Length: 165
Image (cartoon, rainbow, N blue to C red; front, side):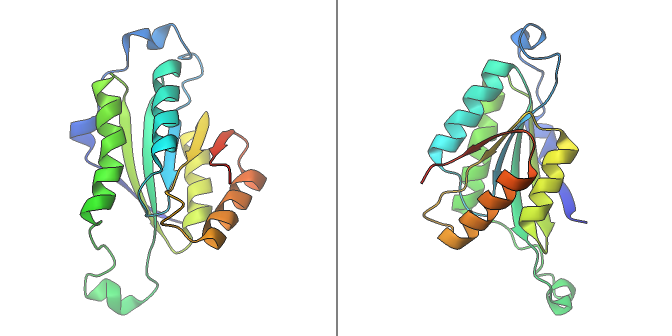
């Protein structure tokens, strides 16, 4: 089971937008913007933000991190290294923008030995209405992206946005 952490809940929990009662609130299914421990693609961020605002739904910004399997790293405290400043900015920016637009935001950091299956599990747990898988493809190997996209296509039953290419 993946380790699920909620990052910075106090700064990013905001009231739902005024129009949420009018558009899409009946389903109450959030928009999830996900990455595999690399910065987000700007197109994915724009699509996820636009969708959350348009639907009046919560935005879940999720980073799925591969947890090192070595017990010694856990004993020495290296299993939870902080994100690089660039990655942290990339994760915080969509949350900040969504909050400024009145969209409720949840940030998640999920550590797992197998981040892609963990992502699929969290998408199901959150009952996401839209999954935007948006890692910056220049920062992720082609094989890793292809495997993640294939797993998403075969397992996720919700609407999905994947970068073409």
